[in-house]
Structure formats: structure tokens, C-alpha cells
Length: 300
Image (tube, rainbow, N blue to C red; front, side):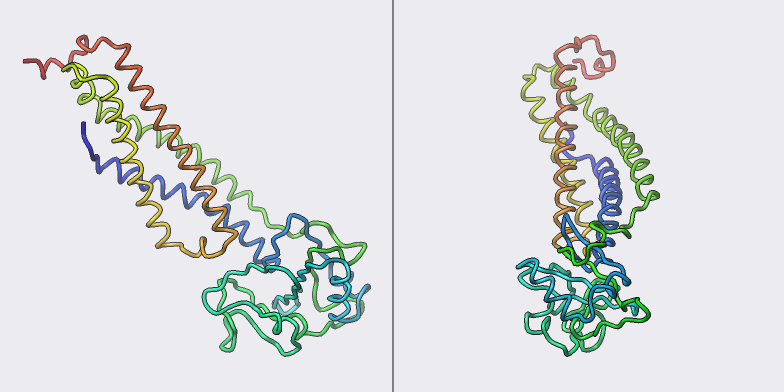
């Protein structure tokens, strides 16, 4: 039995790499939603428009004090007209990915002196995000004819008319359509590669059976060989994906999503390997080996 079929390994690696990139598009879409709402990651979030903020509050301090009166754990995300994102949190683990540096300390988050995370020269941390994050207390609330200078995401409901969901969540039907098409193509191509692999092993398997090798030994060797081949392909794909797009696993939330996707795909791959092995076992048990004509070239 052939131990390594490099052509099939490379084809499989390319296919697995495409699969990882396809799945990553869905994760990136979720990442963009998280980034836009300041990495507020809650099952239940609340959103107040600028007019809602202006009607109910006259200062950032009032917003913070009211939020803290509602919950011991608070996070507020201020979306300013200027494109900046303000942040305030208390007893809350704010999980924002940074390339270097750090996020706000408790002292900085409660300071009126502006501290930033982003791409400014004096930023305390360099972020992957296109937004610049500042401590919210450093930017006062401005009321311009009933419209505040920021809208507000939070983990507590601050106004009676707040949305109890994100009204601007991004969804991309184009990405979903591509995902569906890729799943169909991936399935067909993987079946084709599997058939190629079975064909490359077929003669060796049948000859071993014809020469009297035990069925369980043939099945064992086939299972080890196919598992090793596809494992090498998957590892190659993972390594290339990491080298080309390591940002996806730099953030804890998207890393967890990516790991869950990888585990699901490994599980599906193992099931397919077992099905192929079962097919080989049935063939060896059912087909009369001596009736296979092309084995005659091995006869003595």
C-alpha cells in the first residue's frame, strides 16, 4: 500500500485551505459587527439613538452613574459623529484585540484626560481595528437641537425607547450565497479526491487480499494511511492560513469561533474517512477477488 500520495495530499491541502477561507468570511462578518459596536459582546444589547440620548441625559457622567445604578457590571460604547468610539466599563472584562500595548486601566477609564487605543503616536495600544477608541469621559456630551454628539450601545437599558437589539447589524447575503456554493463544490471535489485516493490504493489492497493477507490488517493499514494523508493535508492548510491571516485568531472571540469550526471540520473528515474504510471493508468481504481481471498481471 502506498504510504504517501503527494499529489492527492497537495490537492487536499488546497481544498482544505479554501474551506478555511470560506468559513473565515462568516467569522469576519461577525468580527465586523463586534468592531462596529466597540467589541460589546453580549447576547442582549441595547442601542440608543442620538436623539434618545439627548432627551434623557445632559452629561456623560449622568449616563455612567445611571448605568451603574442599574447593574454592578457595566459597559458603555459611545459612537461619536467624528468616527471615534468612546468606552466606559466598570467590573466588566472588555475583550478588545490589540496588536501591541494594552487596553485602558481602571484609572484611565475614569479619567477626563483623553487616552486612546488605535493608531495615534501616543496611543497606549495599537489595535487591529479601523476605529480609534478613547475613554468616554474625555469627550463631553453635546446637545445640538435635540441631537447628541453620540449614539450609545450598552449592556443595560438606559432609556425606555432604546432598541433591545442592534438595528445596524451587518448581514451579507453575497457572503452567504458564496458559502452555500462553496459547500456544494467542496463536497463534490472532496468526493472526487476520495475516489482518486481509493483508486490509487485499490490494486495494492486487492493484491494483498489475493495473497492471503488478513482483512483486518489491510483495513488497519488503509485507515492509518488515509488518516495520515488527510491529516498532513489539513496541517499544511492550517499552517498556510495562519501565515497569511493570523489576525483572525488574535482576538479571543473570533479565535473561539475559528477553533469550533476547525473541530467541526475535523469531526466531519473523520466520519468520511471511516465511511471510506467501511466501503473498502465491504468490498473485501463481498467481491470475489479472483474474478477481478486486472489482477492477472500479478499471477505467478
